[in-house]
Length: 147
Length: 416
Image 1: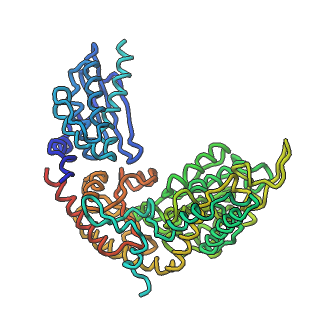
Image 2: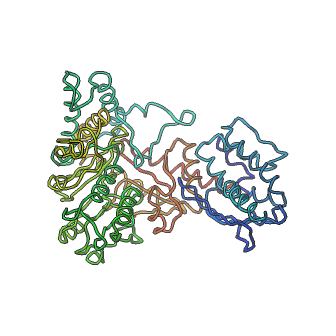
Image 3: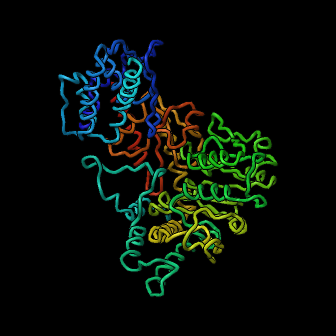
């Protein structure tokens, strides 16, 4: 079933047990993003110290894809430098734009390569990117802060 | 019985195709846009292939034929809603129709009955589609007028208990939907129109979800303006209608200005053509208007009372079958009274996007999200819903397919 390429076990697992959910009061940047087509919302707190992401916490509501995606992102970029995180976001964005033609680089994206299936469903790409775009925004703001 | 879904479905070529690897198309998204019958597709196509020319100008046969077709469509629309031809204005969409009224009111100078000031109020409801909310928010912001609204009760009806406090002597406009695009609720217009007219306010009716589904007669409703879109009424996209009472359209200043809408022009001044031309600047969407005329004719021939009766029966069946699903919450009236064939719902804590995705894999097309009525979603305390909207080509098999797909959703997302 093609649906199973979208809803991978690991995605549903993150949806059921979201990581880093619940906002930390300590942050260098806080951003809120909305998916205007469905109303899904996310608030993300990012804390950067000496160019390293020390914590990323979030809260919000959304579909399994958006929630699992931000959960996995949070795991992935914690303890990375802003530059490393930027490369991860770039790689993920390219995967989402691939319309099902790319598999994703497991060296960079680790578990997040399971979202490759999402890129075949144009209506869901925005869901997968919601948290990532919020993070990108927060990272840019934190960069400004730390300089 | 004269109304046969099987016969109706033969008129709509899209039902000849299958969906998602050979599955029967179960189209439950007519609240967003309706499918098109051959007569509409052919009317639009024939206009381009046989009669295309700019209407109301050109000294040639094609221009005459195009004008006849376009004005013939206006006559069909007028007959369909019980108004006069001269009161029917073609726009590009219902959204434009409502914006036309709101912007034209904003153009009214002191002394004109539509002129608004800070001491006036505009009344809307909490269940409006953004298209019948934001134009009024903006008009209020531009003029300083106060925006007031009726709340929605937990049983999905308008709370009119404070009608005399909401609609007051200062109220100039009451903009309300005939039928909610989310809840399916059909609003009691009598009380609203009576109170509005008592204080000298005009009633602007958003009839997008009613005109395609039931017999709507502007004279009987006694509203002052009515807007609907062609594409939700089996017509083409790119055409909407604004109907208004003749004497009000006469007094309302123009919105878009330019060619076709003038009487006389000098380098510094212009006077306006009579209604409806005053509100139809530029070469209009002729082929789409002609297609809408064909759509109104098609619906008239089926009979709007028969369509409504069919939808009432189908809604009753859908409410009964859907209510039996564990964990479902119907967001809208539970009783099949004063409601249309739009059934929004939530299912356990499964997100509507995930529900929509799964049922799509079974060939069932629904809409998910806030349905362009974000304040309503907040009022009903749901971040989003899934919406099944039924129409004349749907039958009990479609309801059964939806219910089966929803049981599948529970199973699929219950597996982790």
